[in-house]
Length: 256
Image 1 (tube, rainbow, N blue to C red):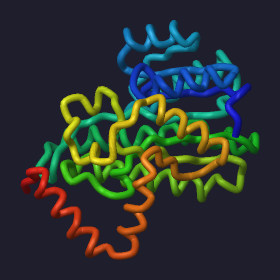
Image 2 (cartoon, one colour):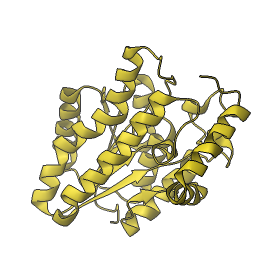
Image 3 (cartoon, rainbow, N blue to C red):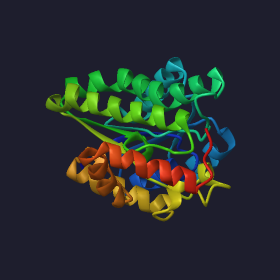
């Protein structure tokens, strides 16, 4: 799909990957870009700089997603591309408080569910549309420093797969974005993390990868190409992969 002439919604659009994507979509000639975020001041500044619509939104609230969709449709007509991008870095193990598990689940999984409920049926009825869900390389591999993040990002990938299976033959394209480290606020103070071993990308580089993948209508978007090899190794010998991940965790001071 080419973005030119399309109406696009981006959640988590006030900063980081979301902001870079919104800028790129506008530059590609989208007929309208709507960005959503909880950071209202930053959201307004971003919208003014890009020339797009800003809608404050808590993606963990299905009613708020509904209001976001209604606002975007009122401004630009039917939504052609919905980028469910908002995320958090709230790391924890099995002993993390239930509230943190729920927060990760609501933002990393249910936000994608709410977006799909709101726009996928209409896209299918029109025979065209695109869903881009941001997950993480942790959703394909794991995150040796966080169970809450890894588990919910795995679920995000699984839901994107289901969407493609359910809607792919009805004109709705689905991609899942799975980067490793990207220079955003989520990485602040964690430059030496395991995710940074293959380098830290700029948000604009990730946006380039998304545009290229959307033009090919590729399911997996892997801004760090090394991830493909890691996934293949994991699939070919799971036991060996797990041993390697345990060594990686130990090397970075991991504890149970």
